[in-house]
Amino acid sequence: MQNSKNIRLAVYAPIFTRPTETFIYDATRELADGGTEVEIFTASSPLPIERRFAPITEVPKPGKWSPGRIHRRLLRPINGRPEGSEAAQMQRDLLQRQLARFKPDVLLANYGQSGVLLSALAKETGIPLFVSFHGVDASRLGRNPDWQRRYRRMFTRTAVATGPSEYVRQRLIALGCPPERAHILHYGIRTDRIHYIAQRRDPEMLEVRFLFVGRLADKKDPISLLESFRLVVDSLVDMRPTLTIVGDGPLRDEVATKISELDLDDFVHLTGRQTHEEVIQHFANAHIYVQHSVIAPNGDEEGLPVSITEALAAGLPVVSTRHSGIPEAVREDVCGLLVDEKDVKGMAGAMIRLAREPGTCDRFGAAGRQLLEAEFSTPVVQERFKELLRTAMSA
Image (cartoon, rainbow, N blue to C red; front, side, top):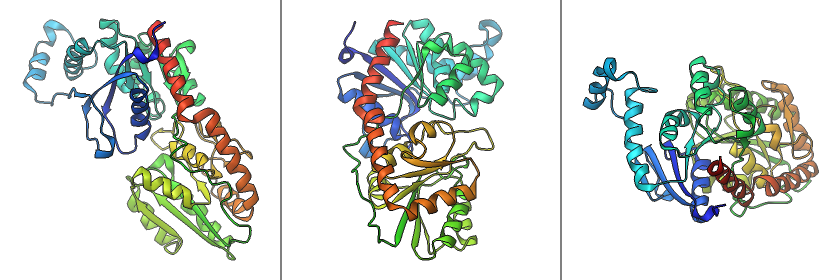
């Protein structure tokens, strides 16, 4: 069988990459550094300087009033409707010319929507299609009948489909992916970058520092987290509890207003978006990691939050919710405590318990780091990634 170092991999992402998509960039970077010949194909590439990547080929989506798009639409009665739309077909035509130059062994589509876009191209060219789902594509879009139909057709042309957790893998199977083609592919965590701290707090320490890192969006439910933290502050009157919230998003103003309404201005620090290096430093300074993930009103769900796995890598005990793939990483009463979604009092109780039990925090932290090294560390995940690429090639 062809050695993984000789694989030529074409990676497609609608945007390569958004600030919150470190998991896509890191996985691709590691493959390239490990010897896989990688070229990025994307509609847009707003990479910051710290995420430079070459080669990158842009395959932009044509504008609504593009002459070529209008011309194709006028010819639809003669040529028929293309799969998806005229814009999608124009993107595929451009990409097909670029792929003919690169001659990849596997075509990797990030997100289910990208898989739908490229599945017709994979069928035409015979290039094996590897579709990587990440969360919203399997949850919110997976509830839409039109996307369900598109996914069913895509899966007939897909060699390998992956999700970051068994929860997402089961969603893919329910959407029509043959079980033997559906696989788990965790997000690899660079444990060499995240320093493990065995003992976070002296038993006599009165201060306790909570941390949340993530986009301020409905599925992260920062409002419920703040309501829980208000109860924590009321209970831990003999201590100095603080909560640092790192991230930005559509709920930023609502979060700031809620902090004031709950009279938490002296206890909550809202940092906004920060670099990954700054986030790692927050992990080093914190005592307990907290995240109240829920199913959003629009049906959006987590896959398996990278922030939680990074917190485990740092040796932080985790308090979170029984949501999506989170229980697969946060083993209850082993490396953290879990509550039901929207259980504000339950989450406050779990946070208070860990604040009062620094020994339990250290025990959970050690178990979390051990779990990360065994199942989520970059070397382990990269070997799995290469194995699945070989599986796609032989499909």
